[in-house]
Image (cartoon, rainbow, N blue to C red; front, side, top):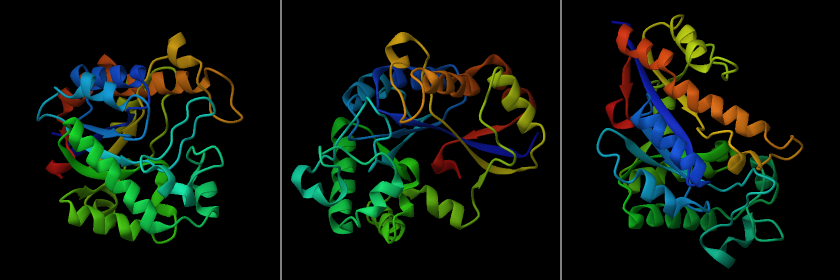
Amino acid sequence: MSGIRLVTRADDAGMHAVANRAIRESVTEGIVRNVSLMAPAPAIRNAYQVLGDLGDGVAFGLHVTLTAEWENLRWAPLIGDAASSFVRADGSMHFDVESLESTAPDLDAVMQEVAAQLDLLRNLGFPITYIDEHMGIGRVPGLAERLLAFADEHGLIANRRLFDAGALARLPGFQMPTEHPGTEMADQLATVPAGTYLLVGHPATKDEEFARFKLPGRPVGEEAINRNRQRRMFMDIEIVDYCENVGIELCRYCDV
């Protein structure tokens, strides 16, 4: 046995139907055991249709979303005008954490939005058990502490707290996948000492439906290639077989 416990997490469920389908495949045919949901994103209801029946083998989490990084796929807060201190002029979320931070957002309003996001996910039917941060929004001064208190109030496992307590660590030497994602991930895991590690990806596919989306300053289609590789990192036969053959324990947050 390897002594490696791997918390495998697929982020950005709800952003688009293509991502939702890819995440489902990463669970049913791959090694993903945690799915992080973006409540304000446009395909969140589709996410429940696609993912809602996955059962107890998967943990669902609130991926606290206060930014929208895509140039041509935008979303806005759930709380409408109450979010005026942390949105752009068009009402959509800022592109990155730095832009959000520069607005000196009203943290009370931010936490109202976080609560609305949790309510939406639970009302859809998702059994939310953990909380994490889209694009590391806990870097906004004062917000990380508020999110930890929110997690305690609502009985959620906080990704940030597991790291602070030393119960979870980044995967040493992790590099994003390139041409052979499953083999590359297996090779990386072969060098890792025993421990409990987090592996995060953003599964999608590079078909035409998703390839039209772009990040600011980047070419159309580039991120679709990257996210297709992240999907394969979770479900290529090489990584599935490796985890099984060497006894890597695939964990939900509640297993840590």
